[in-house]
Structures are given as structure tokens and as C-alpha cells.
Length: 631
Image 1 (cartoon, rainbow, N blue to C red):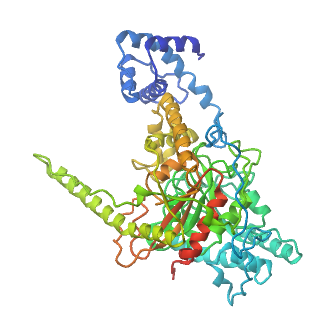
Image 2: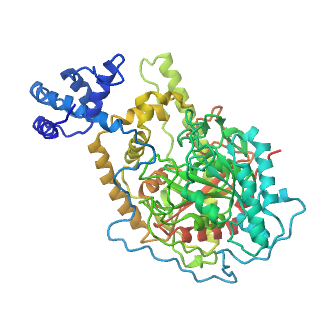
Image 3: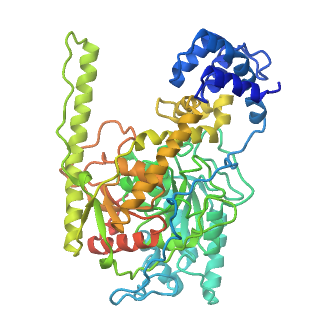
């Protein structure tokens, strides 16, 4: 079938069509009317009645009978344009012909961070503070919860071997995986070969830097040659690629040792994957959250020194919060995503999940920068300096997020309420009351954080997030994700995915087919305003302190600003108990003995400054040194 585009556009224009959604809707409606014809040879003609249905879904029209008559030929022709593109079988690795850059217009090249040291701290050649080399432990497993910086100094001084560390972490992964379900694939042969090589190089004086010989794990959306890359999804269990992801290549070059590929919720949603549900080491009755589920759980459980996760909308933040890790979501466009599963080309970010902010910086230092393949990557610098004089920084906080919440307004009974309506109302009120109890309890940690910052000599500056419809813009993510996995929806292979609920990907992808192209562009125009207005906050302050949840998480993922999530204490025995069912939607449900978190934000490409300030807070609090008891 050939397409007369001019005729189609003319017909649509005369009919007053302003939504690019209608052809897609009509195609779907016609396909549903088709009995069984994979080649689309006998699709029924689009009718006026179908236009009525499609226009209701699109939120346009209604159209008059004359308008619909004019539209019919063009819409039937337009439908034929879909098949040639679908026949290309576009792989997930092919990006659209546009690139998102989060910097506002007329923004100069990001300035280099002040590298002047503070106090007695001295910057070493590897970018970490030169502390005394710790003594070798009596047992290598005593290092299970040590930081990258601590382990690296022992390796450099040859007081522990990479082979011993690798064997220790592999043993712990095997011991705790049956309980926590964080491993998809062990890369044992590769790891032991890398560890042996690292020991030989270090012994020969060829020390590569602070990651040399350090065992780590990859979220299983990163391609590793010779091993499956499953994306956590049913139907992809045997998928593999012939080239390592750029991040994997760079960590190999830094001498790090890959020991495992970790679980992620199917296609990067949540913590449920084809092998089960990844658990929170602090409370294994609960999930670890996601989608960097296994990366955060394994780091928290002392089963790797660090891991790589990814975030599109909370996938580093949420599991880091639940599992008590330090997670760095870098500026969008700082770390190349080549060889990583694409979910949303304008929102996907790769970053480290570790035990400390300094560890985040050491890992980011090895993986950032252009690779010549991911065109979204900006050639900004990462000037990591652990001795940064953070007292010179201007620190803001999102004041309204720390204020007491508004009083609850429980749903009231309606006249002539049915028994079913009453039950739903009472359940909703009970859920809201439980949510408020958890929020009120956790607020004490937020208030204590502000008090601690003031005790550190910081004059906190109140700021507020610009009032924009961030939630409405988040539909951009789902639209791009539906395009990333178009083949699943069109072939019915989405039935293989583990989760099939109302909020899960199969349903979300189907709904996204009805998102108008015009509205997608309008949401991106609103996103431009968000980039400009959120960026303007960092003209007033250098760092913003905020709770890890709520609207800032959506806003800053849309605007591409970096965030560092860090543990901020443990709930006491008086904490509200977790709900009977963990629906995966909330990160504050852990209950007694589980961690809470705090988030710091910074301007674009000021990730080094962000990590330095977060490290100062950790030095003052020590919460990052807490870890769960697993046995």
C-alpha cells in the first residue's frame, strides 16, 4: 500500500484534526476487529463509528459527519504507513533521531569544581583522602561491609588479595541469594580471571587506581559478552550481546572485578523479576524496591563492594532508600548508556550504588564521559575532591517538604451508601491513616537532619520547587518506553512478563499507544520550562537538601539534575509496622529496624561537589556505617 501523505495531511487539515493520536487509535480498533490476519491483508476499513470511538480516547472532536467523511480515505491510507516501519524490527539499541540535553539555553560549559583542599585532608593521586592504610583483617570476610576506599588501600598495600576478596564475595552471594534473590547470573570464571590478573599487576607495581581488584556487580540491563543479559524479564532469559556495555568496559579498564549480574524488576520496573522478588536485607519480608533491586540489596548485604544501577524515575533512589545504601544518580548525559537496555532515551541514567558518598565518587570517576556512541553524553568534567571546603557552599532545603503535613481529610459516608462503597471508603481511610502515621514517624529523621546540618555550621536557605505539572510530564517516560518495547505489545509477547497488573508494563504500554504525538511534544515544551526554572534554583544555592520521595523525584528526573541518596538513620522499635502487603509503591513502609534516607541535589554536572558535601554529612553522622544482621 502506498501513502499519499499530501492527500492525507490535506484531508486532516480540512477536517480540523489537531491530534496525531487518531491514526494509531484507529489502527488498534481495526486490528481488534480483525479475526486472524498477521499480514494485515484483510483489516476492516476504518469507519465513521471508529472515528467517534478514537476521538473520545484522544480527547478531540467530536467531528461532524462531513468532517468524518473527509477523513476516512486519508486515515485508511495512513494506517498503511505503520507496517513498513514495523517490518524493520527495530532493536532496543536503536535510539530516536533526537537527543535530550538538560542544560538551559545559553548555559556555559559547566564550571570546574573548586579543588582547594580543606583542613588536613590531602588529595591522593587516585582522588581519595590519604588516610593511614588499615591493618589486614584476621578474616577476609571482615571486609564484607568495608568501603571501596578502605578495601582499595589494602589492595594497593598488598595486605589483601583480589582473589581472596572475590572468593569471599562469591561465597556470600551464594549464601544469601536463596534468602534475598538478588543474583540473576554469577560471572565466576570471568571474575576469578580478572582478580588473578589484578593481583599480578599490583604485585608488579602496575596499580590502576582505587577500583583495581575491587569486586562489583552489574544491574542485568548492562550487556556483558559471554553471559545472558535478561533485563529481568520473562522471554529474555537467554538474550545475549556480543559486546560489553561501555560502563563494563570502563570498569574493566579500571581493574574492577565483575562478580555478578543483579536482578531488576522486569524491564526496569519494581523488584519482581522472572526468578522471584528481590528482598530487603533489613527486612526480608519486604521487597528491596527497584528497579535496581539486586544492586542495592547486594551492596546492603555486604555481597559486593559496589554495584551499578540505573534510574529513569526512582530506580536508584528507591532501592537505595529501602536498603540503606548511598546511591548517586548522575546528571543526565554524564555516563554513556551504550550497551544498556533503553527504557526512556530522554530520562535513562546509569550510576553507582555503594556504601558511602566517597565510594560513589570513586566509581563515577571511572565511568563518566563521552564514548562516541551515546550522543546524549556531554563533555563535562568530574573534578572529584574529597577535601573540598564545603563550608563555603550555599545550602538550601525544600522548606515545604520538611513542614508538618496538612491534616487528613477522611472520606465521609455518602447518602444511601452501599455495603461495598462503605467497605472501600473504610479501607481507603485506614490506608491514609497508616500512611500518615509512617510519614509523621519518619519526619523526625528529616527534622534531625536539618538540626545536624545547622550544628555543622550551615545556614540553611529555604527554597521551593517551581509549581509546574511534573506528574503530567511523566507520561513522556511511558510513551518512550512503549516505543522501546513496541514489539512486545504488537506480538503479544508482553504476556510473558511476570507482572500483569493495572500499573505494570504490559498495561502501561498498551495505554501509551493512545498518547497523542501532539501532547508528547507539548509535554516536552513544558519540560523546557521545568529545566529552566529548576536550574534557576541553583543560582541561589549550590546544594538542595530534600526528602527522597515526593514531587522532587519526578521533577529532577525530568530536568536531569544529579541526586545523591544517603542513609539517614534507622527506625526504632516504636516505628509503625509494615503493611500486610508490600505493593512496591512506597519506600517508607520498612518498619522497626529499617533505614530511612535523605537526598542532596545539585546543579547540572556538579556531581563532584554533590558527593563532597554528602561525604561531609556522612562523616558527621556515620549512618553509612550501619549494616543489617543477616544470620
